Length: 578
Ligand code: ADP
Image 1 (cartoon, protein in one colour):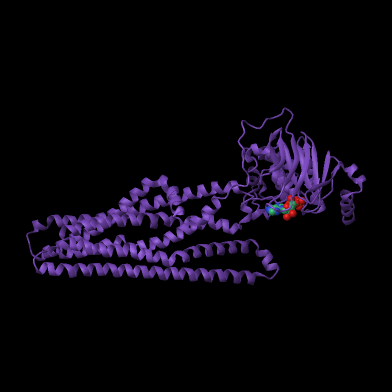
Image 2 (cartoon, rainbow, N blue to C red):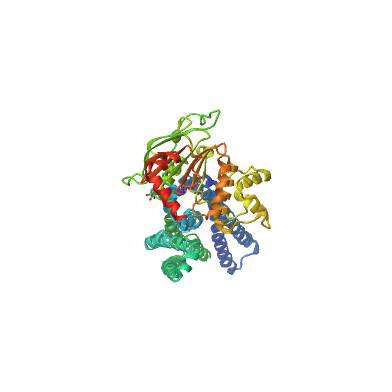
């Protein structure tokens, strides 16, 4: 019920559109009833051969209702679809807005196919919520009331009998449908999402699946899900068929009952036979309003299941919260300084610290390096500095101000990241560069690419800066992608840089090109280099050596080499493998 009201609340700004659509929906059904009733009366009356003048009003009525029915049906479709599409676009924007602050810490837990399915198909499913769930019961209620009065005007017995059948078809059958399809509907939404997620996984990992000969297993998994989904949909279809059969049966029974009740009244002279057909056909026509209700309840179940999945994500609390603090980040004349004091962090409560009691300070223009084996906690520091996750124990201060009092957006303007996983959009090189600074002109792009050692490569391509990079930038090599990421950082021009394994997975030649690009990038900026490769570290003011989240050694390169500790061992190991 809570989900239902939350959905109604989301649709509330479009209430007047919905009221109008409901009104037009009601007018459509009323015209159908009017057409049936006046035609029935006209034919019955005509059989008595009165003067044409006596039939005049009814003839006009038939014409009017006949045309009105078509016009209202058209308007009904037009308005209700307009309202629905507006609602969908609102929902999509709202959902995206709610999801964005969850990236990346919370979204990491969801499969990308699952998220895609929530954004696309679950929201699409909700179009039924208004179109087939909210409006039809209202139209049915108003129509029922109108016909109740109309029949009551002839004889209360008619209206009572009508009401019985109308309620059975409008409440009983839908309720039965609801009970039968509640679980199935939720299951079909779940299965569809699983299927989507497996498809996306399968397509993204196609190369691996083929390489390991596992494509048949993936295909079998998809086929299994597909079969289950088809089965669920078949059952839903069967329930749907049942409800529509019951609805039609009740409609015809209502018409038949009207006849059974009316004929004795006609015989005994208590009911004018000219109205006999009118009563029967008006009752029959009014069922047009209740027949969609069975399906409405089925759609209600599906909509609620889809909405639950949507709200589940929206209700997640972002991993980072900003404590309100007055004013912008204090700027210093000569740049930004960063102070980290006794910082400890673990990803899940109870897990061992990924970082333990880390302290260092970074003055404007300085560079420090964080080295250690894989899993030592190096990237965790990058996650905290960029406010992808919140820290609780210890302090991080930017120009003296606690980092958690600065909004993530502001932090990321000051601290730039070159990560080991650069996401490139399936667009041109120019567009991929422009996300770092949409206002940069061609000259700025070229300057950045020259510094990033990328310009010559780009101009050598037939389409130059307009070259598409392919899905995930797969048309570029690892080194080129990395240099593009450095060019982005140059364009972004953040005063503090976090370089997270910028040369990971590169061969020596590419590593050198990227290191050159990095030297250009690091000029006039403060840098934190995170790396497990101990190359080009002479110029760094301080090197922190991490192991299992703890700083085990610190100093500059020559001090660390003398210490004969972990740094020295890693250094020797690396020298032996090169
Ligand atoms: P490094 O960058 O030095 O390779 P990380 O900072 O990535 O190391 O990881 C440090 C520890 O934190 C590891 O034990 C890793 O398993 C854990 N870890 C990293 N990211 C997450 C995450 N998103 N959720 C839970 N644990 C994580």
